[in-house]
Image (cartoon, rainbow, N blue to C red):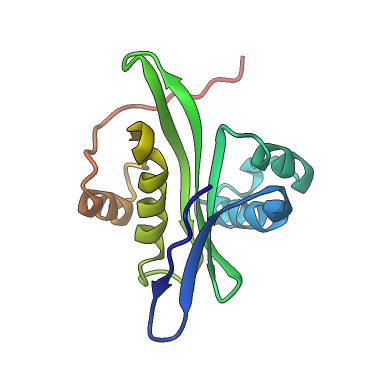
Length: 157
């Protein structure tokens, strides 16, 4: 379970916690928001039931940021084997902060909490970022991430 560390702002506080099955609808709503934001609203096929099942799995990590009890964003990752490293890593899937909560440190807080979750086992975190998303690239560089160019292939045989 991720430790809950509040981020204090002048107006309110943001708490981060690991999402569980009861958070399925809130997480799915934000997944749909990020898909819409990226111009691919039809790409999301999950349901609250499938998300509840995923959130119950120990290898699925979703950290949920809440400001005053309202979902503000999330970071999702899956623990998986990285053959080249010969050990597990966290494969980050999404980092999303809702409109109205951006530019207030919520994304940094989510990434910091993901790092704290990975630290005890020294798990590396790996993810992809769209080539045209310059703002995300700047954000990740400020965190100290190394950005590498690679083509991502997706196949449904």
